Length: 325
Image (cartoon, rainbow, N blue to C red; front, side, top):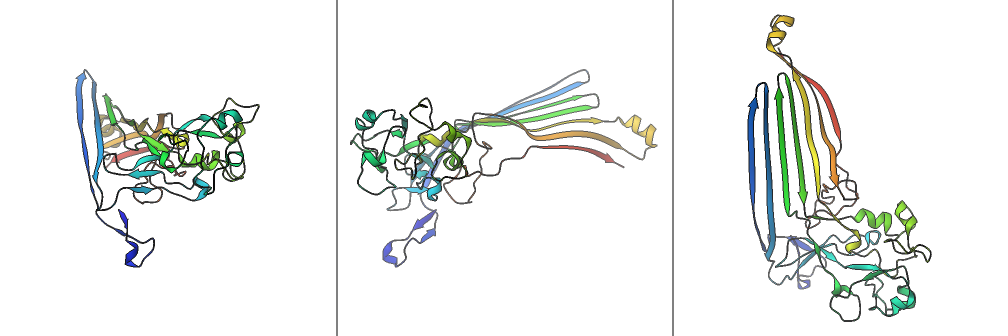
């Protein structure tokens, strides 16, 4: 981790990469397989699954937590992940959304929606109006501030799984590999850009469904200059289920028998196979982004599964031949 040096060292905002703290991974995994044949048909099937629980045990001496994922104001301007002892590494960290204010009376009766990005005394006439998001007052102190951020979920799947199928019938062969994860979260920071309405260009079509006095049946808050209520702050608004099942690889081929090859080529060709294969052809997921297999754009620590419009896994199809002479 990049650990900040004490100010007494004479440097400001400088960090040193160190091996700090400790964590514990517990769980189990299993693999099942079966193979059999019936006449000319042979098949093999196998399935595997891994269940994992992660917990941070300690950090560097004097370090209570590590936050990460903060980006420019275009992305909301807040940290997205937090790491602290007793919880999973790099959990998503922010506010809980409890709907949209529909009336001025509802705004007045609710805890003050202090926007930490504004940095001035809260004024409901300026900062919060009908159409703004309603954030949960977790510590019940009558205001919504940075102390109301909490654990929102983990990027680590509760289960990772896969299964293989292989069939052979006379000269034909078919193989397929499915892979998936379950129980993980993705923070869709791309939606902050396209849906957050922090800036007035490159918005997505979702903003056409923004709240108005005549369009109240929506989960998109009002469009307003400057986002005074902090509707685009890190929250459950942009947190999504990252579970998916994907057909990672599939191939279908045909091998010409040796007897036919010897007859046709007089022994010149010893084997000949034609095939078609594909990668990432099917994906089953409720994730709204480009790809639930979210990578790491920055290469940094503690920012896994934050989707900054990371390039998706491509779908590919190949046709080829394999020949031995």
